Length: 135
Image 1 (cartoon, rainbow, N blue to C red):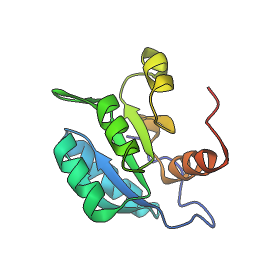
Image 2: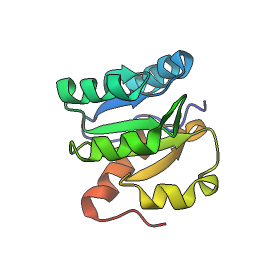
Image 3: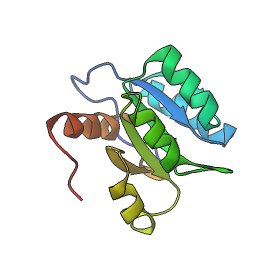
Image 4: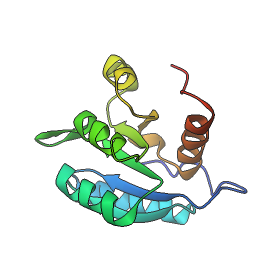
């Protein structure tokens, strides 16, 4: 995982839920985002944990891995959308591998795991507030 960009100037405090079936990725992503000013309110390894965490913590955004082991991150994005939690899908795979599925989902964007950064999350949230992301 690349260090990404440093803390965004004048970035609002963003409360984030991270969902991934890899404990190593959850720990690394949490540490990186906290260092960049994102408040990681909850991490989850599966959809049930994510939904409980979203209900309890009311995050501003959820980062959801496309492949959660035996679960679909796309299905979870739909369920989080119904709970008014904006979702950013992420994967180690390239966006073009899933472009049609991502476009059809309610996710506000896609983020390659290697490009994870607080600034990108803030930009995607800002873009969702002003209109749909360009594809």
